[in-house]
Image 1 (cartoon, rainbow, N blue to C red):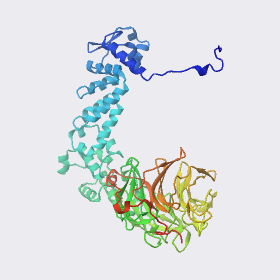
Image 2 (image 1 turned 30 degrees about the vertical axis):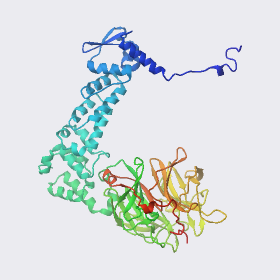
Image 3 (image 1 turned 120 degrees about the vertical axis):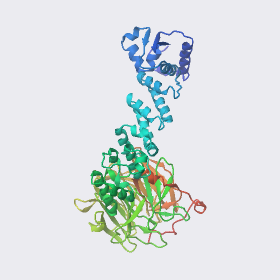
Image 4 (image 1 turned 135 degrees about the vertical axis):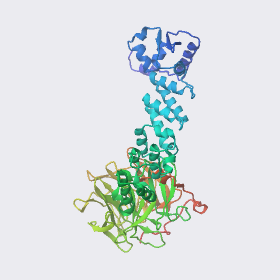
Length: 618
């Protein structure tokens, strides 16, 4: 017989865990309670006894644990008065302790919540808050809000705030709204999550806190009074006619000055990106991926003037938004400056190759476009970067010449000027900005695919060569994330037939070390893709696969922390040359987005050949 501790002894041990034991134990405790057996304590609530088992109460919550196991005198008492709660509420809490279930109705929920807060049973507190929220309306919001404030119920307070945010338009027309604490209303009206279709609704809600709807509608508002809630109104986002009417009604006062500033904001359309402040930012916590232009397969419903793509992860689908833009284009340079989108140059979607000088700016506040000063020369297959208050259009080609020139846009003056050129001409490259420097990666020069990398420091006003990347590529994407630059997708001709092929290798540039490393490769080819960084992940959007000879509807998402690619939500049709970015959109704009519906013609056929349809090489 082996001695204790001898080799092999531990391997003979086995552990048994019963999944049914907890249920059996609870069933036994319920039986003891029903049979009135082994009770060792009586809770006196409103003078009425509730017998219980001391050990179970102590195990169930901190309140009784401190009472019975903390050295207090109640540990020795057979009867213990419990004050501040009702008999009904305490009975329901004991039901929960013995059965894990509690039944609520509107008649008892508030007293149960008070008792659960005192006794410190978090599950019941949470359920009471959820129950109250499900019945919350304009008739009881004051009572529920006072309850949350009185007992410091942060969960319930948050739910009250959510109700106000979601129902501000109807709630603001009630008497209960005007009785809410001023600090709470000001906080809600200032929130990014306020659910309104426009700032005019916020203005009306602000007035309704000080005046009844009838007084507002009959022009009985005294603007010279201290109307505190108007501090939350972002006047720059109000419609111009409403501002003009308001300005005409005001006597000289600080409010009139605010309205005058908002009117000047409207009148200086091209300067608006430089006039941004807290009161001109759209109300939104909804960051979306926007995709502009691109080339689609024939027949796609998205292949039409004025539509662009919008994606929120919570939707699980791509949607389209309509706004007037002069021409449908592809491979445009895209940049975001102070939450305005700039589209610069690119390819006009025609049967022949045609590079553009024209440029546009998208305003997400009103879902509208305007033209800005065109480039001084045509740029296609270029990249666009933002440094400070300037936008740089870098390299590219005009289909006659390959370019080394760099143009810089100044939104203060709406002008382009030439600045320090690249070391040599390059097109089909990709750029990214990191720590105040621009980086340009790879591309083509003549028929040669490149591995070159350059950085631009605006203080030195010069381009500096960095370490070459690990693989030649062009028509790829670049994105800055977590202090590194990721170079993704594209194509090259590094094969025995010298024909274009997909590049699946993904390279990561470390600027501090001026070095490269390889990370997880792409699952599929993406040439001429869109690229966007949302919630710390890189989205590679559509493009074309030269290995398959078709455009792609695929979206792949890179998780840098896990070094893993995931399949994202695909487009409704195959697309290449998409210009993508990330932007916060207001609920008013998001509400206009529609599902991408393909027509029958566009849906037919699994593969769409593109090599001869739109040649990208000379």
